Image (cartoon, rainbow, N blue to C red):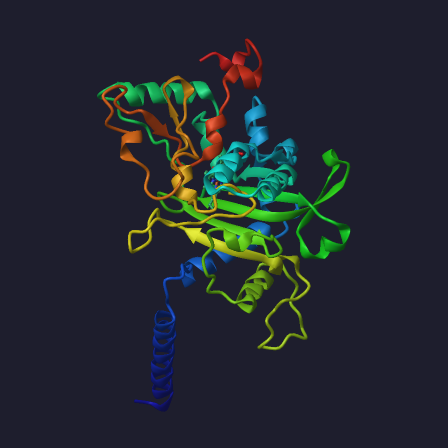
Length: 380
Ligand code: HEC
């Protein structure tokens, strides 16, 4: 063996030993504490960095995506339309009754109920989709209630009917962002906006949900601002990436500026707002490897559902007879969906049709509601 080849050989052995030691250490320190896999954590942090990197015309990439409101209010939606990006913040209304239910079940003291309610009142959300998701919805007319009604009627009740693909294409993505008013002294710690519709009120990003169709049951991830006071009471997992590793990813994606003074050991907590966001977890299955239901939640979105799971609730995005939907909050959104929701009842033989995990599709409107009475767009 030549000396160069020998060196390469010994280097590979050393790399293998290091890799085995690292995985042994990871295994030895593994406990029952839920943890995000190393690969998943790196992948979603890279996705976070890519989605939050500035692009032409927008502070972040996802803020250039189409809003849910534009999709539902525009007769002929176009990806390039500047109005498609116009921020339209909405309160988290679907949680209101959930908080009261949660308070009753847990017998929470009055101050705690008031805290949850006021936290909901000040939270404003922003829901957006990427171009792939929009084009898929538009091509299949799935923003129209008539289309879903037609699909459902065939699915439920025609015995030889084969359902056409109602699954989004690979790479479709959605975000749900949550903003709260902050003081100007806190500005450097948050990704902020000043909303003209709220008299220029300064708002800070406090939570970010992501759903991404890269697996049949999607990939789910959620982040929170490190100062959210109740974060640790919600379903969170241990993040294997240390701040310096995340900082490196942020620098690589142009999210934070490299610090020429920084040493190797530096923990990377520089003046960069994005280092103030924590990953609560990643979900790709309903159950963990031991058969326990996965729990993943975010204190600013799942205010009344600390022990819930993204997939379990989103699997209930459905349409049934007479435009009904499955309940999202009862029974608690945890664990596997019940097959009898979708199949097996005597009539209709298939009670609910799934809307491929996209919850806002439950709010689809009729063509006339979107385009106006008698619109030529609505003639089939
Ligand atoms: C108990 C039900 C419930 C749980 C649990 C839940 N969501 Fe949602 N989610 C909703 C509803 C309802 C909407 C639609 C928004 C609205 O109506 O305000 C939504 C919207 C979203 C959207 C925008 C696209 C869409 O599907 O409408 C994303 C992304 C999202 N949620 C991600 C998550 C992630 C990530 C988790 C887990 C950490 C999660 N959600 C947990 C109910 C839930």
